[in-house]
Image (cartoon, rainbow, N blue to C red; front, top):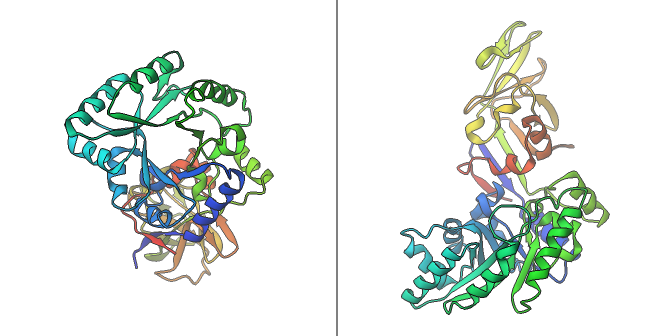
Length: 372
């Protein structure tokens, strides 16, 4: 058994998919498992989703991820953001052969793919991204229709879908999101035979009209809410998401120290009285944010205990009561449930002054993920 590991609850993962199918029954569900499945493990999550009938395809951020995922699933794969086409003919040939659909957001890339497809005697399946206001990738609105018409003329490119991305669909105020959806629909509906998708997890809840041919199920797939407003909308829809990930480690040493003893690098904590310290094999290399120093809590046997001192690269220190009877090897929960207590990703995000997305995504990919 490893000293630090993640437990991936497959029952909760499938439950979350079913919850979204209830509120978007007419949309295909395509989970987003980019960035190591938001830290949950690409291989592990893909192995569960591949057997799930409600999942029609999976989405990743890059062609590199798609090539890796292609070895793990029989389902369709869509690249959402980018691929490198400089000296990358081998991977692109695989994409064409396996019908991995690629993003197009500039005409130069479209022309290149058409030329390469002609050379390979293959066709590329593509998704045209329209920038409706997030100012990231995509054809700006004033150029989109002209670009689409030019791309339609390429004989070796097959348009699979049009898509856009909302800037603040998780927010309480929805006026800007509504305007983005209207701008997207004004263009996309002119092409009735092409798939359309705009809704992420948050937008599936905040914009029913955004539940188009596909919903892109991202953070909420993993039982996490993009915002408090999204959490409230889920509650109003009688949706109960279940966290998929539990992050655990073990105590590797326990020591007693005297009052006045300083703890860790830079001596940022001083024991006000005699105390007991537990040393954990977890640090910022493993993704346990250094901003948690002297703030975070962990769970041992269903009770919260404080992190003391600066979090190190590979070690952290937790203060225990003097009368505690924990031993080396005792299980410690860094994120998740222990007994009747639960440590949420949102709590770690608050301590680290970031968002729950970052807390889970930055968990070191080398830490074992165990499906339970």
